[in-house]
Image (cartoon, rainbow, N blue to C red; front, side, top):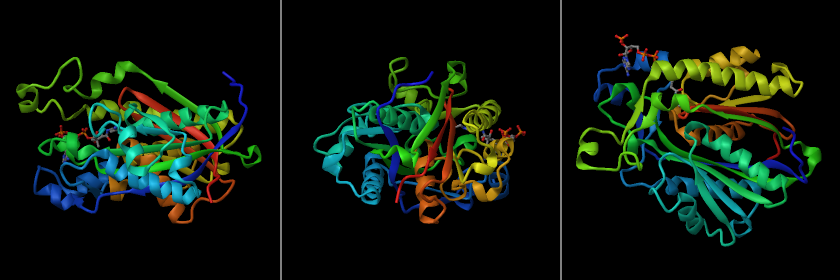
Length: 335
Ligand code: UT7
């Protein structure tokens, strides 16, 4: 459905922040029955960062936001909206967006958290775009931040090898339409996937009790093989659809920045669009799956590596619990 738009939105700054502590595959070999070769071959992950116990998602979220604002050359006082996609908020309420607002001093902002698991960053980016295109906001912070280690069972080898902590943030601003900015977005949910990937307890359906804690029902539950099948299909079609429906081919794409869940899922999407390795951003080897933080932090890494310049055609793509999935096509507009 074509939307009526008054203005154009573009990413004007990117930031990231990760805890210092590294959890390597060799470390995990000492905790569960696994090995480095299995993890690297099946997932592409070599190590992940882990926050000190008791670190809220706001801590690295605020740091990533500050770096993104510095990159964009804006002040916290100028931010209109703070959106925080996360599955590991500091607390169930208030929103981590409120906590970050105080930490960074965004005195005129409003904001909220958004939960769409690994697709959270793209869903929030589409919201930021809509606020700007409609004229309701000029400067929006989108901060994907996670402390996945707070909801992982380190005795479950199916999940503990996958996830890491960290944050990535972008500033989205009203820009000159000539520069391109955010061109198109495609987002979907399919609730039939809820049973394959979830956190069973701690919500209204199953409030916390001594038994839910003893049974580890507050930890990530995943039926990996099923999620994998849907993820390959979802990521590959979301990537190819958005490229093709805008009249482009793989050759036009300067950089593909996928959610970092599994190197094999990324390669399947890459093959579908016919992209070379040089066109794909990979950070899963060093950070693992950081859920809503993976795409914005991968953007920051790509920027630091000199892989993004004004006007570059960039494709973002994600798949996560829900199921949720989506893609975004944009022209790069950060300095
Ligand atoms: O980010 C949100 C969306 N999430 C995803 O996209 C994740 C999607 N799923 C995946 O990435 C993959 O399914 C996993 C990486 C989670 C697992 O890889 P897989 O190739 O699907 O392995 P599998 O679950 O089919 O397990 C194969 C074998 C099993 O042994 P049996 O039953 O064949 O004897 C597992 O028990 O590997 C075993 N296994 C392990 N072995 C060593 C499972 N985990 C481990 C482990 N180390 N950590």
